[in-house]
Length: 270
Image 1 (cartoon, rainbow, N blue to C red):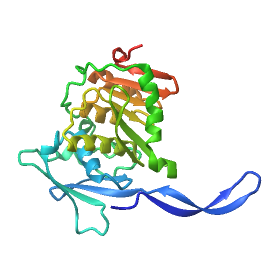
Image 2 (cartoon, rainbow, N blue to C red):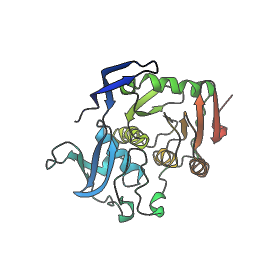
Image 3 (cartoon, rainbow, N blue to C red):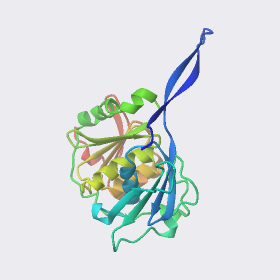
């Protein structure tokens, strides 16, 4: 496993003319090539760590797998110098990725869908009835989630350069947290963790993300059966449309004691 952080020398300048050289801690960003049965599927830029969870979550989001029994093995490829290529073996009967799902080029850490080869490849069949999830949450519980997520961001404390995704229960209990240079990677790691433990669908759970709520993050939550997505920043228009269509609750600008509920307000109590 590669390093999560590295130390690099920097020149720190002050407005008063001060100049000082000192070491700084940076979050590592490295490529991970994902292969299925030896066939390259995509390359994503990620922070090393929880790679098996990342790949499992990615495949679940793409509708390729739905549970731990759909995977027979995951291993790092021995023909690569670093542990930056991971090959997946699917269980017999599991349909391999369609050609439309293959990325035409490298996926960056900023955007997980910009390499899609077709708009149609964005539309994944939903495996769970999220709209039928009866979970209810209080505004007080939701308001506490950003601080709880922030307290669990250990690598962010050292680098200031990572996104985070946290999975919570309806009472605000933290179940899992993952950090990564990419928002979508952090979510994939959380979903992959749950999938490998046989916890999908994630009924009655809340996914809290440290940045904005994009279409892709909303889609990933829906694919995992998560009824509530909350973000400290804004959602996109397409994220709101998808949340409404899927019957999800989407909360944005969750800061302090205020928040905006863009979809599924019936799940939020008083």
